[in-house]
Amino acid sequence: MIEMDGIEKKILEEVAEIHGIPQGAYNIRYNGEAQARQSTKDIQITPKEDGTGIDIRIADGTVNQSCCIPVVIAKTGLRDVVTNDFYIGENCDIVIVAGCGIHNCGDQDSQHDGLHRFFVGKNSKVKYVERHYGEAENGTKGGNIMNPVTEIYLEEGAQMEMESTQIKGIDSTKRDTRAVVKENASIVIKERLLTNGTQFAESRMDAELVGENSSANFISRSVATDQSKTTYYSNIVGKAPCHGHSECDAIIIGEGKVLAVPALDAADPDAALIHEAAIGKIAGEQLIKLQTLGLTEEEAEAAIVEGFLK
Picture 1 (cartoon, rainbow, N blue to C red):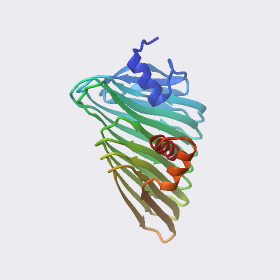
Picture 2: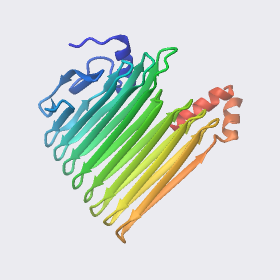
Picture 3: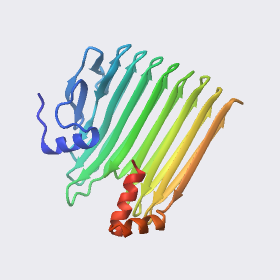
């Protein structure tokens, strides 16, 4: 049984909704080191020989099971770099929960750079939930930095849905997600980003559709407030008869800035690719309607943002 202090408990609740020791397979990384780990019969978690991260191997036919691998940083000046590889067998149906939370208590930057690689076997279905969260003690000058990289390789008939959320408190982030999708396989990525102050967030999504009837669907929603900036790049390459869709919706509040750069590359005449982008302020009539119900302007704005990012 591991012991967790108040900060660790709070961050684990934010990034992974963990309220105690998780059930099933898990790996908890704390200040750059593995704090606790548990495998199951069907999900084996082992450290890499070079100490750079962990390997997660999921047996063929594993269904209705989950794996949780959160990261907590509660130390100023720490740069944590980790590589985690997921080897998912055929005919699986599983949920993987990850994410990182930083509590910065000093004047130096704290940073987490994580690479997650998913090798998903034939006809398997994976839901991957990733949450990023940052906080700091009063008067702290150090920043919270996260640079997650996700690589996804889907075999024939595989499906993966990725939900990635940046809750709050991340001063700088560069998010890079890449997928290679084979025949009859599909990838869905749903991203939610909130920036404020002078925070900066850059997100890149790339999909290479190499198999017949493969598909990719990117959905990015962001809110940039104060003087913060969010940039969204997407690129879908269709190398076979396939379907691709990229959608970016963003709200600007105050002096926030948003840049959306979608790209499509139909390398096959039967590749059907679409992109959409919409950036703007909150409509005045929305605010007025909520204010007539008794909300202040700030409360109305917050309610609209919360609903938009769900």
